[in-house]
Figure 1 (cartoon, helix red, strand yellow):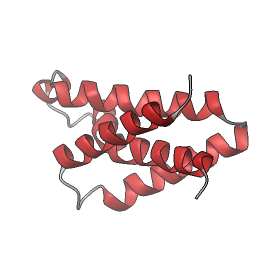
Figure 2: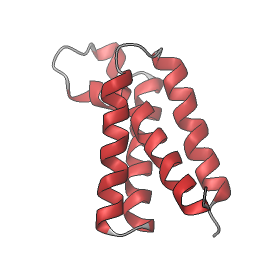
Figure 3: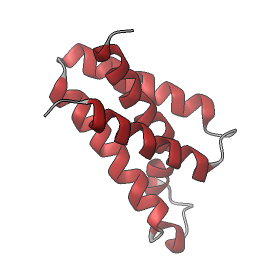
Amino acid sequence: MTLDLMHLILLSLAIGLSWVGFAKMFSSETDNSDLLSPRLTIAAAVSLSAIGLSFAQNGMGIAVGTVALGLALAASTARTLNPTLGLTASVASLSLYLHLTPL
């Protein structure tokens, strides 16, 4: 597996595993206490950072594919994955991506 492919997979994982927490922000059924929780703040930061990095580091087609793969992952794991575990894995994935990316 090449390093570029691994970067794209790590970004897709970061997007997919943090998207459910981030999308709660836009639901009318979300309580105010959930909106003010650190979990939502971290999910939003990870999700938006991973999306921004996928567009900054790649062409438009590859970036859209990376985001689409992340959203597909989010849709498939939304009901089965523990939110705290998913967010932890998402932060780890983004951290590993940043560690492996040369400056």
